[in-house]
Amino acid sequence: MKNRLLALMLISGLTLLVFTAGSLIVPSVLFMFGISITKLHVGLVIALAAGVAWMTVKMLHLEHPVRYWGVALAASALLFVVCFWISGSFYDLSYDGQAYHQEAVIYLADGWNPVYDEALSVPTGHSLWINHYGRASEIASAVMYKATGLIEHSKVFNLLLMVASFFLSLSALQALRPEGSITRAVVVAALFALNPVSIYQAFSFYVDGLLASSLLCLVALACLIFARPGWLLLSAYSAMMIFTMNIKFTAIAYAGVLTIGLLVVLYMSEQFGRLKQLFKVAAVGGLIGIFLVGYNPYVTNTLTKGNPFYPLAGEGAVDIFETFIPRNLETMNRFEQTVNSYFSVMAGNSSEKIPTQIKLPFTFTERELMAMSAPDAAVSGFGPLFSGVLLLSIILLGLGFHYRKGAAMAALGVIGILAISAFVNPAAWWARYVPQFWLIPLICVWLGFSYKGNRLITSTSWLLIAVIAINTLMVSGTYTYYQWTWNQTLRAQLAEIQTVQGPVKAEFTYSWSNRERLAKLGIAFVEESPLACEDKLVLIRSGTSICKQPE
Image 1 (cartoon, rainbow, N blue to C red):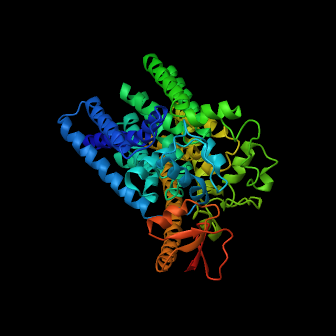
Image 2: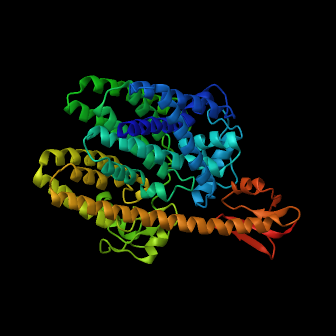
Image 3: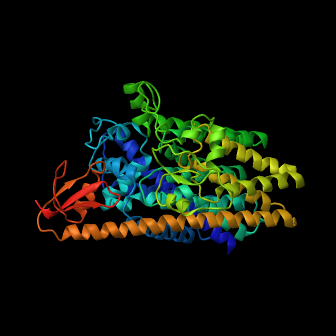
């Protein structure tokens, strides 16, 4: 029963992964042939995911393959429906999500082909980001939006990839330690997937949580590739690498460091045949990710602006951190900044440059809970108990070295790869820009569970699990509560506007994507800026104002 369930989880995990990556790769390839996103795109993606599910069944050499294939597809479909429904139950109330992520989704679904069409000029002033940033999330969401006509539901990939990362993590943990406790593996895999960055961006179009799940999928696939041969796993790794590289610019460095780390591990374990296979697949995937799927922005940025990472690098580069970094961190190097941030009071994103405040680990304040309500926690962004988590992780790693250095060195090697990938980014102090940091304490937990019969290490491991779980519950509970409360307020406001007879005057400021929100509810409107009326209704956290009287 256990083996059958794990097999189904691996099949479903790869199915959801390929569905997500395919929602970028399929339309990006068709862009090169001048074909914009259509309603048929989602059918091609579903067929691709179903084909990979069948190939996974054959790879596992399962009895009754058709039955396994059918059950896995049914499970994947059910999970998709649940994630789709949850995503659609929440309006995106984030600034970036409404300002340019949704705007990009709408333009892509309306036929914009970024390979051949002119660069967009949108009235919000955010054309710079829409035209020049990576857009894996936006293209995938546009495929879903075009097929369903539901803009809020199209952020389903945040939740979908969290589920896929859980399934793949569980498969990887069991592949590395098949004799280990399934309960422990389930707990650790769940906490791997429930990255705080993924949680507090789940109901928005922000992309850092999606990046967190993508990187976890890459790490899990790397472990599976190390544990068992197979071209299918290598191909899945390449597909996920392509998707990750196109989420945002820094993801190229992250995926590159993780891939190099896996190559080194395969070399040190003398798996030379698999090393050659991975090198070829990763090289091809990297080239496809940049020159085909990522033609716009990477190639077009280079041709038009002289740098593939414009506007974050090259002539006229924009420093997006300068405005928000706490003043006391400005004089520190990136390592000092990181330590200071994660041992400080949790705080949200602010341009006031308020200095950080070091706090006692395992404590938290009411102010920290509020910082978890939005998708952009800046200081100590992995949660209010993360400083305590780091201290326990150091203790557990030290105990591991004391009792058995070999296993501890292996864990330290993986931790080192993740740390290097994070410190490539000069803003490693800001959690959402380096979500892979979350994996480090859980690697220490898995190390602790590998020491059988040692009560001290086992007890410390479970204590660390408890603190991580409490921290995760605090983040998820607070974020969901505030998002639901604000959404209820917004729904009441929109219902009030629906009662107005005739078009209303509206001003959208930064959130022109809200035009779609009003249109979906049948609210006729006329844009006016600045908006002049006495009965102005400001929609909560939406950057939109409405005159409650008809025009």
